[in-house]
Image 1 (tube, rainbow, N blue to C red):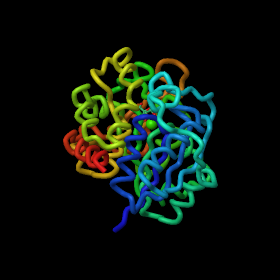
Image 2 (cartoon, rainbow, N blue to C red; image 1 turned 90 degrees about the vertical axis):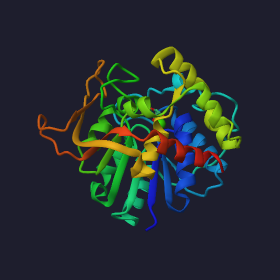
Image 3 (tube, rainbow, N blue to C red; image 1 turned 135 degrees about the horizontal axis):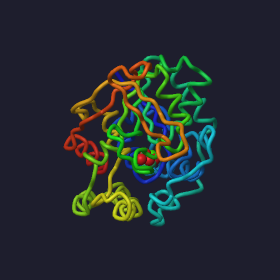
Length: 310
Ligand code: RIB
Ligand code: CA
């Protein structure tokens, strides 16, 4: 049966690689792309998504969504991805026109049109998803599964000691999504740190694939590479959104998981946006989230490379 996938993204350098994988592996079934402010302001994220769509010669509609988190001011990650979010390497980004309509309405319409079959993949803050659930709570049952790049299962954060950026950026939206009945799969930053790091040598091998996509995929990580060296101590760069996309595209990427409830810390201190995972019964909340604990790096890299080779 043809899969129907909707991607929500705050398009920066790792999102862009995840989109390359989505365009390649599910061309017939990528029904829409919603864009949300996060890594970069909304308009930049929209232009980055439109640039990647053109690179993939796709007609998949791209819709602009929320320009800021639900209740907090927008705080971007341009220090991580660059001012343009794509490594500031001078890619020909800008001047493209998104499709008419708001990403939240587009997601609701897709959930209704493909009721029971739509698969949602989120690569940024969960603002659009929270708004869609608030406007049309029934989509929680209509959406077959929502794979979320966000949070951490080991409380090792990348924006505070214990919080991951997508959840930290809009914790209220994340709390709405994680407390909903939506069937979720959480691919935390721990999975990226453990299974999606590319050393300089490995990055050079990817770039040596030689296509325009491969060169963009690696060169757009330039600022991330510097951030990793300075801040996260990763020897190379990691690709959180692409490994989450691999989970969405192929269940074989998951080696071990557990089912749990997830509660998001809404405080303003160092625990802001922390994902509190309960796979026992300490917290009275339905266990609606599969937490990925181990992934198959080889399978992920296979999916990644095949998307870069075209
Ligand atoms: O913490 C990693 C996540 O935050 C990724 O989705 C990256 O693109 C940023 O949005
Ligand atoms: Ca992202």
